[in-house]
Image (cartoon, rainbow, N blue to C red; front, side, top):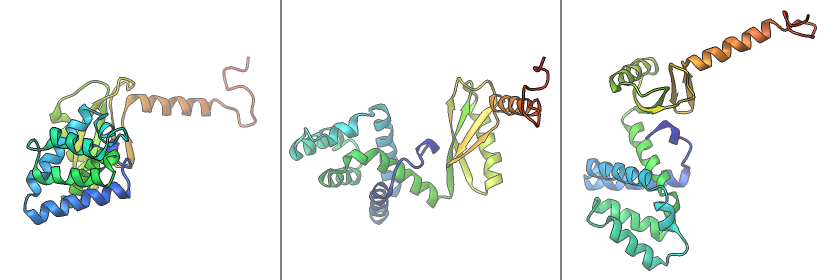
Length: 199
């Protein structure tokens, strides 16, 4: 799960996700179900309107069940398919993306893994991102996995978001700090125009 997703799911999503994890554990299918949930997450990213469409009140319960069967039955793990039917019966397909993110978050917690996002001005090598993740991991005492995203607004360097913390090493941020210090240094204690601009 990407760190951008943190705080984008609540107690309901986490309850459903934990129920699926426990069911997978009991069935001895944890690895296969995890892979299936990851696949579902990719599908929801590619088709962001899918969950909303399935949850639409324009669909009857029968139509919703038929849609789920047509899209997922035989194409994903049977336990996940049955779970989706339960979520649909409860009328909570609207929070399906959050359930998927919560599932990944709980799995990471169980494996002592922290996921984050590395923002870079231009796409860089996965090896470099991995090295950065290892350095951060040693500092925080957890395994860190970083997902790379480009951010054209960065002049250079890298910004790392881990959970709700932003580790900013970008040149843009450094320039802003320097600029603010210069402005503050040029402002007289008693007010008035900055030094050098009074004439």
